[in-house]
Amino acid sequence: MSNINIHQIKALTFDIFGTVADWRNSINLEGLNLSKKLNIQNINWLKFADLWRSYYKPYINKVRYGELPWANIDDLHKMILEKLLSDHGINNLNEEEKDNFNKSWHRLKLWPDVKKGLHRINSKFKIATLSNANIDLLENLSAYSDVKWDYILSAEHSKHYKPDPEVYIEALDRMRLNPENVMMVAAHGFDLRAAKNIGMKTAYISRNLEFGENRKIEKININEFDIIANDFQDLANQLNT
Figure 1 (cartoon, helix red, strand yellow):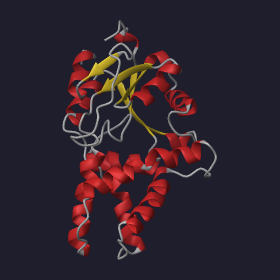
Figure 2: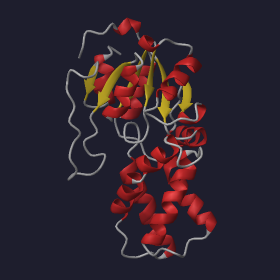
Figure 3: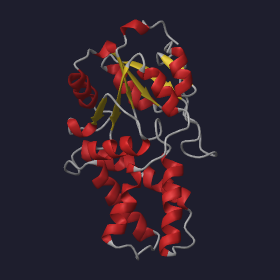
């Protein structure tokens, strides 16, 4: 950990997909339930989840670089889902069933350390989402997981996607805080580097199983960010909460 002044920090903003929520196993379970309901066979839903996620950044970049007009994450997820269902030969879902499966992302399960860690952190600091997910998704996920955020902040507010600086700047404006008073928490280096570039403090969370047991772990320079933590409980410890 770098020599940061913890007393200077007033709030922490949290990435959601992969950092707070275990999207991979959650989508797998939703897929297995769908298979039982509609008698869909021979689908590896873990691989399906990985594919769904793998298109996430390319589709976001289509919006960031003007290839697509603004579309929120629900809309982008639906575009990807339509492609994947077609690719897998799954053609027996009606529109209501497609929309419900697309909203699996509203029902993600949290990593087991998150709720206790957030509760401890929130005893001393304000906590906020700061996600590419749209506002409706974040509000539904908050209710589903029973997590009370002080602020629900989304890329949708700025009509930009991380790592565009506008996302972080808009979040700071909404909290009425300066960059040095806010710590971005994420399991992805690109997110933290973008926050760091505008002056925010940074905390990297190791989520080694985010993409499954056989995927390469992101390499992080331990001196690159203000805090390197194993999980949210470890982060709470390092923040003296």
